[in-house]
Length: 466
Image (cartoon, helix red, strand yellow):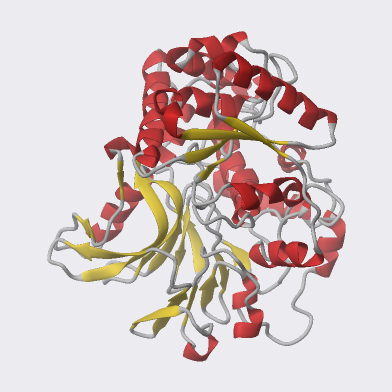
């Protein structure tokens, strides 16, 4: 299998029943008929119950901002005598975690694979081969004709800033596990596990705003306790929220802005520099670097050819400058702005398949409407506002932004601080119109660092970018 590996990232794994598929030089573990393999540098934490019995593993970096702590091995789940209690205990733990990780449960209560809240650690699965991996190139191909060449041509990933949606990949036999779902290892099928119930907006927005701000601030406290962090700074909303939350820890925050040729890149840089000069931030501008063919090949392997390489062209300098610092990008923040919500949904109108494709910026060309319809069927139990938030988290974040960031290989990894189910839940309990009008973003920044609101945002008050 070593010929299939073309990576610099340590965030990879293979879980399968065929030992001969395991990559050379990787660490490996066995549990019954299952074999787990991963790069030696990938952190592996054991899951155990109160009686010290093995339940599985968590691979990658995971922190609990509510407790200002990192998960350490062994992780003891407060599971009772009922085997199914281990599942409930694990899902309760995952609800509050931030990071880039995979949880594998193989105990008597259920055999499952869970991902992080934003899909930052890719999980792909092949039911017929009974294989689960971070990259499709770790899963052997079954003969000829397994590629979705028609869908790939339709999406024009090589020319457009897009991705394979609705859990599809370039391979007919392989799918992506989207956020808020676990993979049942007995049936090799995805099952929704979150949210358990409808988040209902309350009459007062202030408690929710302060709770979100506290979790983000505690995330920076947890990160900077280990050392310096590398924070993206743009003219948008999401990096401004993150900067506000980082205020008490600026002594360990190095900011950066990516330079690019487009007008939006130039506006980002202009606004970022105005913040730097006004607030005396530690900051650097990352200029573009020439990319070689091997850079593109590695990125496409890391992302399983599922996302466009266009963002990587701009983001490649991060790999040269981040060093061991965790990289913090403005990922996952659209939930704070309810960007897909429209006033007509408040009247009881539900989004259609065409609406879904419009929100995700895909053409209504077969087979996409059918795939969008299946997506809506799964979201039917939720109100339009919650369904649209989940659409963003699972499709846009889990299908595009998370996998895209997985292609950026740095020693400290990418830490998506806004991708946390407790933060998502708190956002969904804020009225969608309040979020859509950016009042939630403004109130959050005002509660953490009000002076940041005196600096214009890119695109003006209605700008929807991060």
